Length: 100
Image 1: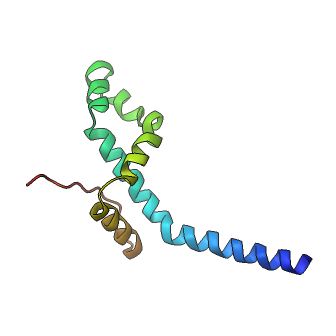
Image 2 (image 1 turned 90 degrees about the vertical axis):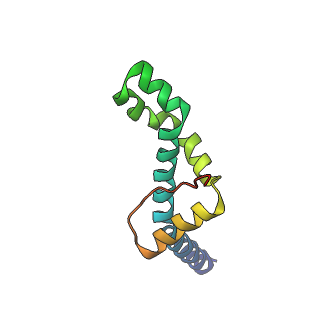
Image 3 (image 1 turned 135 degrees about the horizontal axis):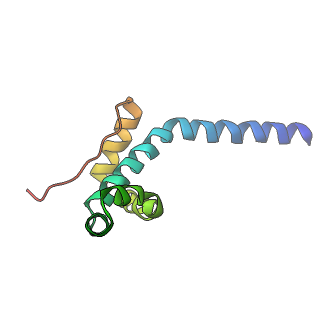
């Protein structure tokens, strides 16, 4: 029984570490995309006009979870680019799709 628990623990540990090695940079890219979405939002503009730029930039921490969720809902093309950038070791950058 103890041997089975050790084996199971090693399998789970391998799975989690492999997942984070593959997806860790992807999540960093999504976070950068979330910050980009925040800076484009009316909420950021409103805070900038009323409280100042420094406050607007610092208040992203309060809204990060919401904008991270929005970044995960971006079109598949953007998420695919972020994923490929993470796999190829490219620096984190943001993307947008223009109407043209």
